[in-house]
Image (cartoon, rainbow, N blue to C red; front, side):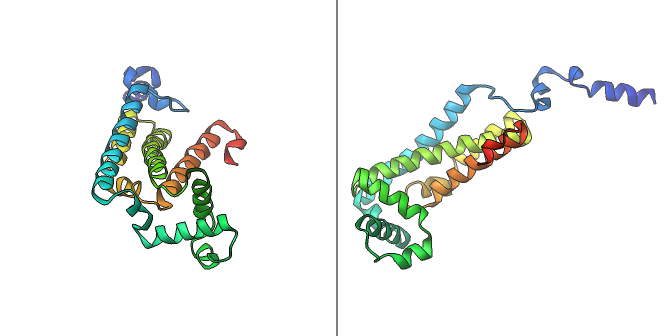
Length: 195
């Protein structure tokens, strides 16, 4: 019995080395902001290199017709701008969310896909930080969270999808942001984060 009491005494927060004390906190804190900046810059660099290479090989205008879904999204966005019913079937098939976002983009920036691809590259890089944050919230371990963010930064799927005009990058960013805010709301008791 004395052995069990000593063992439990060693398991207390005070008995743990200082490097493990962060596991016992309720809300995970950012340990080193320079690591997160480095993670963001690494992800942005990798996505930027792939985007720059793709633009150099294919040209900027080829991104407007790179996939059939891209063509359908842009046709629906143009139909929304022109207030025509030409894309009703496309809106019914794909849903109105991404075509509405593209229609706002087309109104602001015109037909050039480069600003939208840059925005998607930044959102995809920010998704790596959100993966870090989500891992930190769920596990509380700094090393595992940084490793999850680095794996997300090197994800070829995420890199290649950020270079296409598709809904995947925007959806994934919004989904991760909602998960992070949801878990923040649960831990802090703030109901407004659920909305």
